[in-house]
Amino acid sequence: MDNQHPTKKIAIVVGTRPEIIKMAPIIRYCEREKIRTILIHTGQHYSYDMDRIFFHDLKLPEPSYNLEVGSHSHGKQTGLLLMRLEEVLIEEKPSIVLVEGDTNSVLAGGLISVKMGIPVGHVEAGLRSYDREMPEELNRVLVDHLSSLLFAPTEPTQKILLNEGISQEKIYVTGNTIVDAVHQNLSLIDHPKEYLEKLDIHPREYMILTLHRQENVDNANKLSNVFSGLELVHSEFKMPILYPIHPRTRKRISQFQVKVPSCVILSDPLGYLSFLGLFNLSRLVLTDSGGIQEEACILKIPSVTLRENTERPETLEVGSNILAGTDPHRILESTRQMMKRECVWENPFGDGSSAQQIIQIVMGNI
Image (cartoon, rainbow, N blue to C red):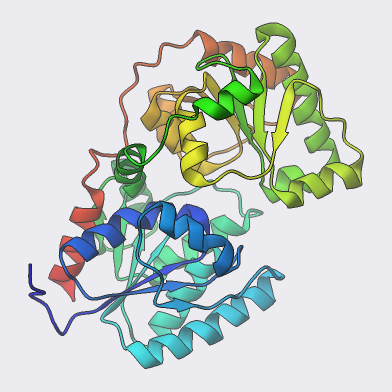
């Protein structure tokens, strides 16, 4: 269809792969409806060349801009993001800037936009861990309070925003675009048969580990405790644990001389669709990732969260997730509980129409 809003232009800022995954349904919807969009890839964690395959696999258009900011200290990275985003926004003059989540790219995108008088829409607003030592918590709180439109995934996240004094008129409960993303991306994946055959493992007879958060991997004691816990889990359930490991975590394991038990099968990082295929056939996931908690809930896979808090309390309430921290015996006991649990919970994150709802609200407000 023809673009019915030729004067309206949406800038979409992404900086990390989880943001790309969650923004993909919005990008696809805008493309389908021929809405003018500017896709800005900041390259916060990866070079664009590494992410090029990622965009290709998800069948997304190439970004309009690649800022290639890269990994730095929080101050330097945020400063570079502010400078480079400002140049793009001066050039493009978008009607609104959309950001998703809680990274430095999100903070910088929100901050420079409001300073330039451009409205900000925050996708996945209202999440709180209440742990101010997490840089992500600071980012999400700040962006919520400077945004013009806040897209809360659930009623509880809306309540959090209201309790913080944000106007009801700015908040919309839309569900979470991760539901749209999981449903859309499952149709793109191939069955990971060859990978499983190579490892001599079978569907529902293995677990998956994701471990990347600074508070876990940069702490030698916590990192060691997690692997001790995994050894206990394996001794009871006899299932291999697949761990696509980030180079930074591998470096910390070597630096701290942490023993990785033989039950943990290390691999290089997997492409998102490859990982989703393996994840979808696993028996249980142990993770410190917020997004994985959501995806596990949607895919009906029990999750054990290796943290003391979560900004996704809905997963705890429906019974798809449990907090284990990093104590080895708590990890084992939490795994026992989740292995007994029937995977019949309801998905609290929406019906898969979040992207459409968000863009319709955006177009009605700019």
